[in-house]
Length: 156
Image (cartoon, rainbow, N blue to C red):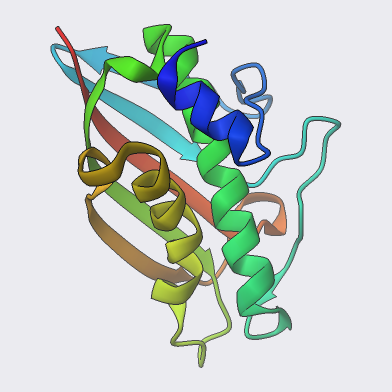
């Protein structure tokens, strides 16, 4: 088994099949050269629906948001594997855009986004350290609490 997927399994996680949008005319990932751009993805469950729904600071806790960000990252990694075949080909996680469905007074978006960032650093070490934005949004599709986009550098 490839190294990164083995680490995921040791942590108790399994990748799912790549997720495609049922509501939009776009693909989950686009590769150009050595960069892969991953479309915004949320904390979708394999059986459908989301891990949690609602706004941070108004019904969804920071811990629940953190869990949603981690699940979102697992979904992004599934989409990335679908595009490149093997997560061991990742040379660098470049950038995350973490969008947090937040009450206007919620200021802890970085703590929520850490759910994704912490997982990447645990899996990839220094290759997983990345630039990141963690911004509050007034709404996200389906009332999901978190949506994340990712840019990844991969082997040629």
